[in-house]
Image (cartoon, rainbow over the protein chains, first blue to last red):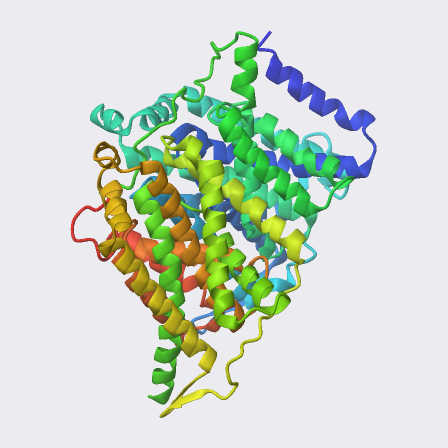
Length: 345
Length: 290
C-alpha cells in the first residue's frame, strides 16, 4: 500500500489537467510545483546533511538567469574584451543553468563547509546577497532592475510527437511534474545509496562519522552540488515559464518559502517537501481571496514559530506516527535535534 | 587627499552606528547562543519609534532617542520572554527558525502599521555643515557619532564594571557554573536580549533622521550586523566594535573608488574572505566561543 503511494500520487497529479481547466489554478499549481522542486533540493541539504542553507534562492536565481541569458543572447565587455553570445535553444539554456548552479554549489560547498552552524548560515546568506547585487548592478548583462523580458518558452522534442513549444499552461504543467518525479527518484536513490548513509551519518554525529572514515568535505560538497543543480533546474523552469525575470527573484522571502515548505512538511523525509510544497505553494491562492500579502507573510511567520514549538518533525513524520507507520523505508528525521553544530575551530 | 579625508570622516560616522549594531548582535550570540534574525527589525523598530516620538508626539529630539532605545529594550525583552524562554536548551538551528519566523512577522507588521512609504525625521540641528578644513560634515552626523560612541562606552562600562555585567560575563563563560554561583540565568538572558535589542534600536533611532525610515531598512542592517560580527568573531564584543568601523571604511572606500552599486556587497565579500582565512574572526587570539 505504502509502496504504491508515490505512483498513485503521480497518477493523480497527471490527471489534474483533464478536469481542471481554469488557467488561474493551473498557474498556481505550476508555480507551486516549481517551488516544490526547489524545496526538494533544499531538503537534501537541510534535511539530510543537517546544514541550514539560507542562500538557496541564489542557486534558483542563477539557474534562472543563466538559462534566460543563454536563450536570449547577450553582449558584454569584460576587461576590454567584447563577448557576444547568440541566442541558443531554451532547452540548452535550461541545461546550462543546471550545470552552472551545480558549479556554484561546488564552490559554495568547498567554501562554506569549512564552517558549520551559524557561520554556514551566514555564508550562504552572504552568497545570495552578492549574487543579487551582481544581478542588480551588472546592467549590461542582466538589464538590472529593468528585468529580462521575452524569455522564450521551452521547446521540447518527444519521440512520435515532434517538437512542441510550451506556450500554454498544460504542457508546462507536465514538464514541471516530470522534473519533480525525476528529482524525487534521484534524491531517493541517493539517500538509499552509501552516499546518503554517509550524509545522514554526518548529520547525526559528525565526529563519529569522520572517525569511521567518512570524508566530510567530499560528501557535503557533493550534496551541495546536487542540491544546487536541482534548485537551478527549478529556476530555469521558472524563467522559461514566467518569461520575465528580475533581481527580485533573489528575494530572501523566496528562501523563506522553501525553508517553510521543508520544515512544515518534514525535513529529512522524501515526502516532506512535496507535502509542504503543495500546502504552501497553494496557500497564497486561498489566502489571496481574504487577506493582503503582508497578512499572508505574518501567517507564514507565525506558522514557522508554531511548527518549531508544536510539530518540530513536520507533517509527514507526524502522519506516519499517527498511522503507526513509523517504520518508514526512508531514514526519517532524528528524534532529537542534532547538537554541537558549531563552527569548526 | 581632501577627498580621502572626507571619506575617512564619513566612514567614521557610519562606523559608530555599525559598531552599535554589531555589539548588540554579538552580545546576544555570545551569551545566549542565538543568531538573532530580528536584529534588523529591532533597528527598524527603533527608527519608527524615533519617528513616533519625535514627529508624531513632538518630543524633544534627544529625549526621543532615549525613548526609542527604551522601547527597543522592552520589545527585545518581550521577544525573549515569549519566544525564546521555552527553547532555552534547544539547538541553534531551532532558535534560528523561530527568529526567522519572528523577523517575517515583525517586518510585515511594520508595513501594515506604518505603510510602505518611507518617512523622514527632521532634526533640530542647523543645516549648515561643520567645516573642518577640507572636510565638511553635517551637524546631525556629528551628533550621531557622539551618541553612538557614548552608548558604546556605556555598554563597555556596564559589562566590565557592574554586577550585572559580571554576571553576564560569568554566564558567557559557563552557564551552568554561573547558575550554581547563584546567578539568575533567566534574568541574565532576558537582560542580554533587551540590551542587544536596545543597541539595535539606538542605531535605528540615530540613522533614521540621517536617511529615511522604511519598513525594509532592517534587512540590509541585519546582514551588515552579521558581517560585522563575523569580522570580529562571534561573541567578541571588542571585535564587533572594531568590525563596525572596518566595515564602514570598506564600504565607504569601496563605494568611492570601486563602484557605488557594490557598496552593500563589501560586507559580504568581507564575510567570505574572513571565513576563508580566519573562520573565528580576525581578532580572535585563541578559541573563543564556538
